[in-house]
Amino acid sequence: MAENRRYKDPLAYQKEEFLHSPEARSVRILSEYLDPLREFRLHQIHDTIIFFGSARIPSPESEGFETSSMGRYYKECQELACRLTEWSMSLDRDESKFVVCTGGGPGIMEAANRGASEAGGSTIGLNIGLPMEQFPNPYITPDLSFEFHYFFMRKFWFAYLAKAMVVFPGGFGTLDELMELLTLTQTRKLRKKMVTVLYGTTFWQKILNFDALVEYGMISPEDLELFQFADDVDTAFQMLRDGLTNLYLNPEVLLPEAEVTTPAIASSRV
Image (cartoon, rainbow, N blue to C red):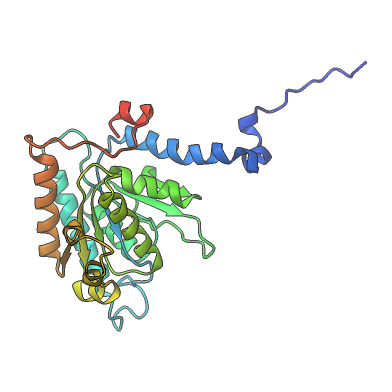
């Protein structure tokens, strides 16, 4: 006869080994969807402005900032995020509108979170676990700092809430994020309008020859209307403020949300 057991086996969702197993991958993916959803509901965040750009651009406190040709982008990103947050907070609305959201790391991401924080607003960081151990920067609102394992879930949260994006100079990661959002907009997988500003005309026109894509028939001429260029904070701020006002603050304009509409999201208006 089996010996009487004086303990209970742990519940499946309490088993560490199971949660990290291949069989629980769907549970981990779902967690990276539901945890941010819960926090965005609690903080009444329905709209974001996403900032993309290089993690390698130095902050003013970094060694070599004064000699870096790219260092100015940190300060200009910081100022732009600050001004956008101040403008957003001045809107007469109950929910949090147009919250600054970044990839959560250093460089341009830190600059944007820093500017929004200095303006007294909430600010989001969607960090990703990488081999070089990217750590969240200290300017993210604590409850809105998220750590992702899956790139595609991180990209979902970038795309779903965004009403505008500002793309500063960057490398592979920045290009990936830019092209992902442009593709979703071009193919109308995002049915909403996205205000897109590429900051640094000389950089972007040297890195990406958009006119050649039109010339070779790879994109349509009207696809060039999906984004605008800016070279200073005043111009970028005006583009973003005016675009967001016309698209999302004009009561005569009602645009649908992103195409992804699960019951959980639809009921929360996220």
